[in-house]
Length: 349
Image (tube, rainbow, N blue to C red; front, side, top):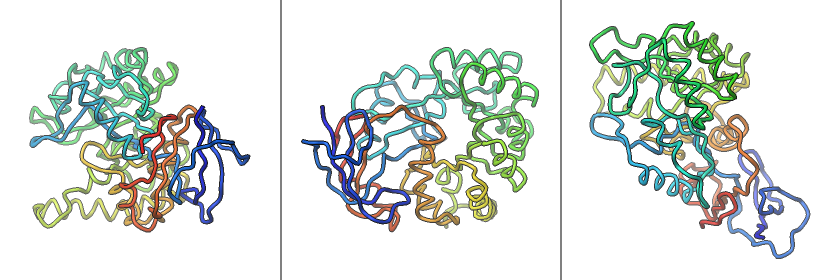
């Protein structure tokens, strides 16, 4: 049995180094474990957690594109090597991620199955089987029966057939019924939302708002009251806020950035679980840097990409340890260069 000896500052909120030991089951102990393997690095996390990821997708010139099973598996293994020990898959074409088998050195994965959206209301390459409103509850419960921990509801999206932009994809009553049924089946609901309909989704009982560019102060307070999480996916949301973007795009995204700079610290102060997620185009070091630039402390920004998702999403006890030579709270880029990585008891670095 392998055990590890750790001496360092316990991230994300620790300040002074201390020593502890972790056994092969992932249990931390203050008592020495003889013959424990010492790990290099003076700063320690239970690993990074990506709370909105798509291992079965890649970025294409016209939007996200599906990947084959082997490529999705390779993504997860590569992420583990970089220090990501927990992944919440936020949907895959046809629920491909549900078909991936856990193996040594792979992050813990909570998968959402296939995307739930009606025809013409999501990326057509990803929407393998559109879901009509009358079939929504059955489709959602079906994903849970396949092994999904979450279901991914596309709650609003542009009408690709030329209708009004950013309208809800399903009625409120259908979404409330979906949420109740999924909860009864033991699952949770992640809702893609970029419009003001987010407030109604919170009332309907969804468990997390993904993106959330339509959130406002009242919605944040409702999330705090209900325990609803928020994954703002900042790189994906604000990634075009640069000199190359069109002036109208820069103006719109600038308004989103300013609103997020107010809402994110408010959410933290009220106890809303803020969860970092890379979507298809981001990275966790970049997400942490953006969270810090929008009003979170360096420790809070790092918590959003590590301990807070682990607390909210939940993962079985296992030996996940990632160490760093330099404090990533001083510079999030240090997250890209771990000193040691132990994922599920398998040391990768």
